[in-house]
Image (cartoon, rainbow, N blue to C red):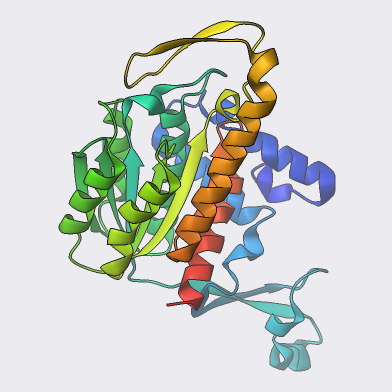
Length: 310
């Protein structure tokens, strides 16, 4: 039994969070094992009820526990056994899940030890493993200003996706609009496209870039990954910061700038959420210290919301 599998109450949830801490996962080294660890803990632990409501196929019964939705109690089984059981369901099958990963140079930043690209790698490996459990087709597209690597969606490509994720390294400067045009041109069947990036573009430009996927009939989920320092500018003292994509260097005093900086970051995130929401693109933001189950929950919740508005 995993640590997450036994999570119950606040103490159990805290243990599950530690279990899915990306800094702990980084010590494992093997991406396949990371993905299995995250998904097994996630499914068995505190978010096991997440799958209800986003699927249609009956899977099995399990014993009722306080807090379960009574709508899923099987009263016929109760009449026969005098025991309460709830119906659980499998996620919808035969979906094409395309994992689109930003590998531009800015994704190499990691002030707290874990680069954004590594966090994104863990997240997408976990989604690939989840897709395998759900019998979805899964593919991968890595991009900076163009396409860096492509694995076409297939039910047999989970291991191939993991191998390619392992090999990816930070590339050149990013161009989200150009890359998304190339992604859209290469997808010939409607599916779910999960775009993981730091989204260092104007919110309107991000919305326009992803709108090209939406008009082709794809469901799009955007997950923004940022380092904690990029969110709050918490530095020990004055620093010279360098733009990883342009090489521009700028001396900063965090004590003088932190308040205004945080406001600008928050405004940018809210504008992204609003502009993407107008185009029915689900958006969530994470820092690289956030447990992976938070990101997986956002993905599943986004998939459920998109399914309701198709």
